[in-house]
Image 1 (cartoon, rainbow, N blue to C red):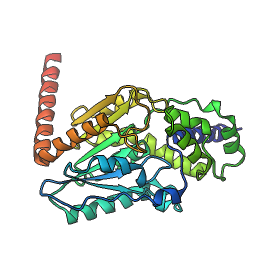
Image 2 (spheres, one colour; image 1 turned 60 degrees about the vertical axis):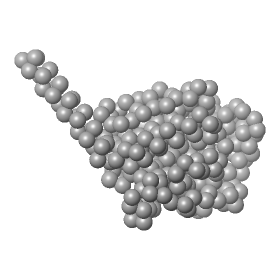
Image 3 (spheres, rainbow, N blue to C red; image 1 turned 180 degrees about the horizontal axis):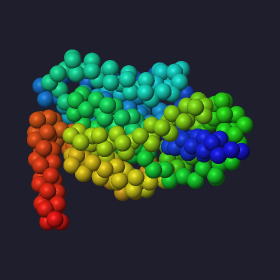
Image 4 (spheres, helix red, strand yellow; image 1 turned 120 degrees about the vertical axis):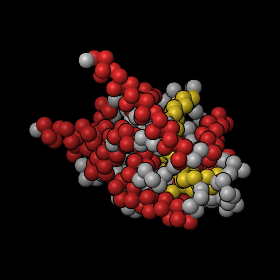
Amino acid sequence: MNAKLTKFITASLASLFLLGFSPTAAVQAYNTVPVIPRVDFTSDSVILVALHGFGLSRASYAQLAKKLEGQGVVFEALDVRGFGEKSSSRLDFTEASTEISEHLNALRRQYPSHKLLLLGESMGGALALKVAAENPALVDGVIASEPAYKVNVNPLVYPEVILSLLFRPSSPNRIPLGYAKRVTTVEPFLSDLKAKLKIQRGYSASELWRFRALMKSVPAAVAQLCQTPVLFLQGDSDRLVKPSGTSILSKIAALAPHKLVTFRKRGHLLLEENQASDDVVSALESWISERASTSNQQIAKVFDSQRSQLLSSTQISQQEDR
C-alpha cells in the first residue's frame, strides 16, 4: 500500500471517528418536531440561529429553545445540508456555509436593528465559526460548544470500520454503536443514542473527508475572528473531544473578545438532545445579555485600544533590545 493511499485512509478514519459524538437518527423522527421561533419582537431583541451536530437536526434544540423563551431571544434552528429535511443532499460544508450566510443576510435585511448571533455544537460549532469568519460584518457573536478541534479517540479499537473504509470506500459507512458511550453514559440518553445509531444514514469516505476538512479549519477560522465575540463552551468530562483543544481555541486570537466556560462533570453534548442544564442556560443568557447591551462600535473601540497597547509595548520592547 503506497503512502498516499495510507494517508487518505488514515484521514478518513479520523473523520469517521469524529462523527461518533452525534449519531444519525431517522429523518422522519426529527421532522415531526419543529422548532418554532418566537414572533414577539422587541426593540432590543437578539436573533439566535442554531446549527446542530453531526447526524442530528434542528429539532435537537427544542429543549434549549423552550428554556430561552422570555429572554428577549428570537430562536431559530436550521437543518444543515445533509441532515434533517436536507438529508438527501451530500455533505458539502462550502455549500452549507453559503446557504447559512444567505439566510443570515435575509434576517439582517428584515431585522436591521437586532443583534444576530450564531450558535453551534460540535460540528455545528465548527460551521458557525467558519460562517462568522467568512462574514465578519454579518455576525455579531458566536457561541461554539465543543467544536471538536482535538479528538480523544483511538480509531484502532474499531477494526470493522477500518475494513469497511479499506474495501468499500464508496459505500456508506455506519458509526460503531460503542461510540454512543463517548457521548454519554447517562440513561436513558445512552440507550436512545444507540437506537438512533442502528437506523443511521451512512456516509461515504469522500463525505467524511469533507467533514475532516471542516474540523481542521477551526483554528484558522478562530484566528480570523479578531473583533467578533465568541463564547466557547466545554464539558470537562468530554470523552470524545479533548477539553484542552477548546481551551487552545479560546486563546488563539489574543486580542479578540473570546470567553471560555467549562462545566464540571459534563460530557460532549451541552445544548442539544435535552442536555441543556440550568447552569448551561444561565451562562448563555448572561453572555447573550452582554452582547445585547454592547454595540458593535464599542467592541471595535475596545479592540483598537488593545491593539494600540500591544503595538506600543512591542515598540518599547524593540527599542530596549537595541
